[in-house]
Image 1 (cartoon, rainbow, N blue to C red):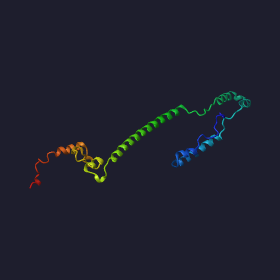
Image 2 (image 1 turned 90 degrees about the vertical axis):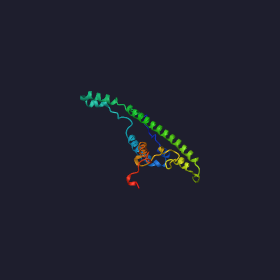
Image 3 (image 1 turned 120 degrees about the horizontal axis):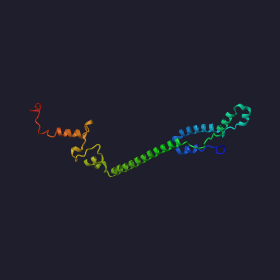
Length: 191
């Protein structure tokens, strides 16, 4: 195990700081500090388990020879895996990587759609005549959210009266006032 032990950190925090830039320099410095504390704690420990002379212990305590034999077998069977990540953690890592890949793909599709929408909007406003030369149909064409196209029938126009701008409510109003000219005049309005 001592032959495989690292003597130098694999992470060069100066390069990491250069890669992420000034914006994240504080976070990288904090990470470097935590890494240094962990690294020094690991390096302060011995590379291998200490050796015990079990034969000498058996001579000193012959009445505990059976227990010392079991202890020796257990102690010699201890194997600390170097660089092996348990399978349960690898599954969690794989699951998280799939989640991140899905999220990145979704964001890339979103960015692609946004770029296409931006191209459409740019093309629309590049074809727009100067504002001084606008006619009524230009306002409706280039600013439909503000200006209604008067050439369209009234059914396609939303009323915008709070919560009453649903098509059903508009049809109710249309039905209510369809014959307002032929209705009799109320008494209080008669001359």
